[in-house]
Amino acid sequence: MGIWSKQGACRPFAAFVKKRWSKRPPPCEGFLESEAPALPAYERLWHNRCRREVLLAPEPSQSLGACACTGRCCLESCLNAVMLVECGPHTCAVGEEADCENRQFARAQLGDFDYLAEIFWTGPLKGFGLRARCTIPIGHFVAEYVGDIVSQDRISNWQYIMSLPGGLAIDASTAGGPARFINHSCQPNCVAQRWQVAGRYRVGIFAAQEIQAGEEITFSYSNRGQSSSHACHCGTPVCSGSIWQPPKRQHKKAASQAGQAMAARSRKPARRRCRVRVQAPSCPGMPKTSESEHLRKTPKKDANESRSDDVPSKMEDTKPDIQVDGPVHRPDAGSRVACESHWEEQDWQASEQFCEGFYSQLGWQHAPKEAAKILEQQRLPCSREQAAAARLGLYLPTALLLLRDPSALEMTAR
Ligand SMILES: C[S@@+](CC[C@H](N)C(=O)[O-])C[C@H]1O[C@@H](n2cnc3c(N)ncnc32)[C@H](O)[C@@H]1O
Image (tube, rainbow, N blue to C red; front, side, top):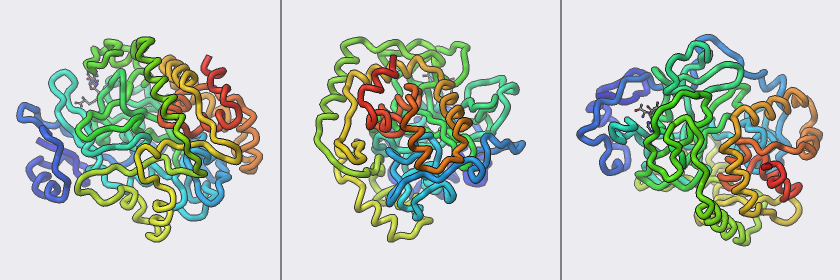
């Protein structure tokens, strides 16, 4: 029996347990049940591997401008984050890395994933899966989907594939990270989002709702570019029957209940200028915040300061409000539901085209303020990312849309 190791190769499970288990919090009950088969061998990667060096986008120094953030770089308002571009040393207007929230991929790479989730045997129907080892807050970066960057033409088995633009894909079939074990659900608790990090496309799995310890981590495979059928055993009421198909439409009553719940949440009064969207997960036995791990390369003082200022103390407060200079706008529940159901029908390519179109038009050669103005004038399509953003508690383009015109979301969702 084997499991990933930092050396890349599979290591015997017993040796892994002896060396690492003592340092970890107690595992969720039933980890690797006795009837579970051996974990198939695969090579553990921490980031994508390009066998042939492929530049997926121009180098940031040539094409990306710095964001226009001042004081603190917030995911809700950072121009880079709006375009699903991670800030880097040359593309962040805020000097201190610790003041920038838009470094999720970089921080996740520094963090210890073992605290967050573990591989487990779900049963013969779905095979191995990934489940939370602690409460994962909504919006939290769960894991990066890493593997070999390959041409889609060469793919024969789509089981572990995540498609990328330009006919490329991330293939995690022989080498990858724990995200390769995430199973499909027609009612997932996570979303897969494609970001540009230092000029390359990378895929992150983000919590779309609060995930409880022991809960299986899932996302939807329905738009990963595959059309063949494979019976789905997610067991949710909206199951489409196939892991590559979008889920059935939610029953009207359930949709309206969800809408009411969202409306109730949106009535909570809150006014904060720049909130941290994500609260660090709370695990028994883990360091106080996983961010302290993530930020260990940054000066300690800054990391602590930023946390104490911005991290809300209660979970109920973690939903971000959008506030620039005027009053707080919140979407009405109806428009959110409309947007989400629209998202289910949307092809991944719609948002991809939008983002690429935006870049090719602007080239980011414009000064940040000018780019911000153009962005504000655009009527953004209700793309997958926007809908996902709305689902995650409003940030990114949805936030801009609503700031400008709260009814815009509804209009674009048609
Ligand atoms: C990326 S892998 C997920 C990890 C996989 N379960 C394993 O044991 O390695 C995708 C494969 O898992 C299985 N799978 C994932 N979600 C499923 C679901 N909801 N119902 C049935 N099979 C599923 C399918 O065989 C699919 O091709």
